Length: 154
Picture 1 (cartoon, rainbow, N blue to C red):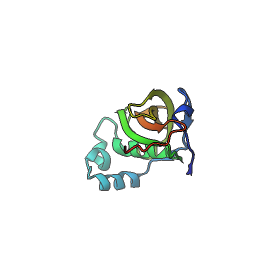
Picture 2 (cartoon, rainbow, N blue to C red):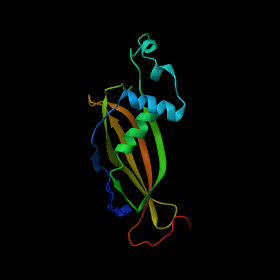
Picture 3 (cartoon, rainbow, N blue to C red):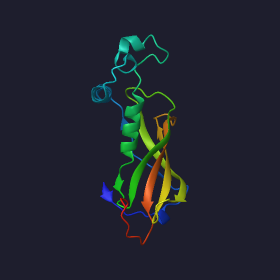
Picture 4 (cartoon, rainbow, N blue to C red):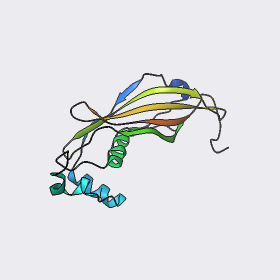
């Protein structure tokens, strides 16, 4: 992880970056259940899941979101702040042993309401080992324009 200043003007619609992969483990399921309190049998009861349509335990969608977004955090941009996420969708199930990676594409830019800042939208797709999208969302960033010395709290 390193620091890299990227200003609003530096973002180009269509630019894409791809992360490394990460294999999802049973430990991930158990730890995420413990953190969130989501102990639903869909995630933790292997025998019950054998009677369900997927035939095996499925990952918590919120866990795949957390891990998928975490994979994108390879550089720190001191010129940008996360405003949040829109249009989050759990597209396909993820199973123990699946390997996921994330693909981030700059999909939109617009001048911000706050002088000296713009909004950049990164479309994020989490992809499994079969090349299938398992999660999609839009990450909204508030990004400083070049040659601005502004305080976002103002």
